[in-house]
Length: 53
Image (cartoon, rainbow, N blue to C red; front, side, top):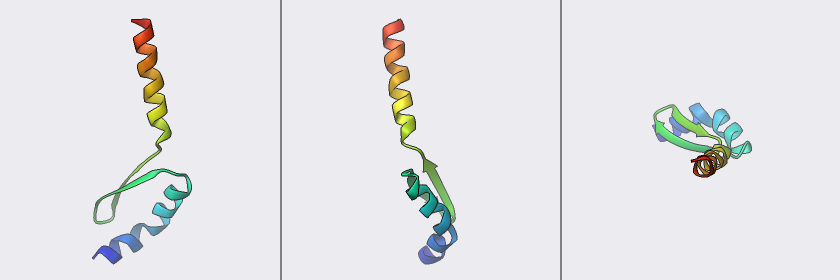
């Protein structure tokens, strides 16, 4: 079952890894892909809120 899951998502996982995104397996054939650069956006927004308050 694990091998089938990995084969099913292999192309998408490889593409995400090339983009340096994080890949979290959430179930059979299900993935959560995330671009970690959004963490930087969140941090900048938080700093902006602190200085404008």
